[in-house]
Image 1 (cartoon, one colour):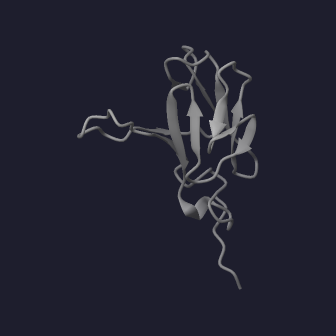
Image 2: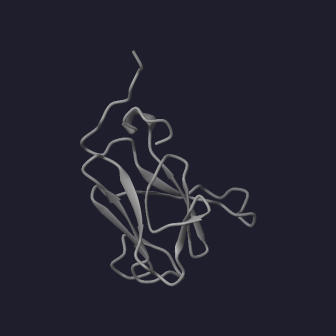
Length: 122
């Protein structure tokens, strides 16, 4: 019998985006995290974006939690585009450790393994 992880209908696993710190980060810089919302998290520079990042379109992208408790990254057709793990992204299921590039920002998706439905890395 293969061990599997459990499904958490509340969207468990502490799903979050973690900002990558670049080479010019201060030595005592604190890692910045943003906890994803239960339904849809809007990423952009607009006043109504959930995660506001300078230099992006008002509504640049979304991270959606679907009925299967997966988090889906969706580029909203911006001119700047987005990349997930170095590849252009339109709509893509996120897995723990995925790197998301939006504008000059780099974020990583993480969630605890117990919420990963028995599938590796995600």
